[in-house]
Image (cartoon, rainbow, N blue to C red; front, top):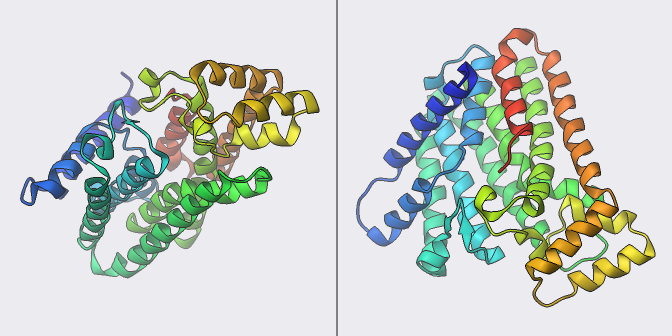
Length: 326
């Protein structure tokens, strides 16, 4: 285990412990038991770790950013619990989703509780940053909901463009990652220039992260990704792969793809057929090229940082994301 991997593991352990502290084991058990269950089934804690690395890049300390890091992870888990209900997913992090283990009413309440706990955590921030960070956090909550709305709307549409896709993921996925870098830079005491650079960096890797998620959805097994294999395709999601294929498919491939997608319930055998079509149309290569482009761009943005040597943690973080398998 190298130094960076060891640092990530230590930060993850710290955040895991703080998450459990944020969700006390008290009554009513119908609220806190599912919350603690969901927080306890794992998760890579990428967003809070990114927030802490961003604070450190501008000269801040872990303690300066820890409360906000925990808050952003609580917010992220709120989105996952509710997304699982809306998308009818049965697996999350390799375990039963909250609405499957309990029921939808419990899951809705658990999600609501998570966002409340996130704001409680934010209230611990020092006064000089409280208003600014709460404003960014609140705008982020609204944008994430807007992104989810676009995601659901697009399921019923056949004419979603790549511009539409990038707008959607910029809100649904990218906003939380951008919040992490921006809030981290603010809490670490960054200058306006440093905050702007790290905000731009977060926006770019947020885009790469989602395209990578789209690719993993159909390329990796349930055992590796920890959620239902091909769940996005089965749900009719307009992922990068799907939108790109619908824009570039010839008439023959288009006909085959449409026939498979119009099936009332897509089987795993049909998913393999869709994967073969994507491969023939070089959609996987397009996605991989796009991911690499965004990560390279993100690193070039960090080159503009006033003290580039301070961005080593962020560069290592980008490399870790680029090579992730789940």
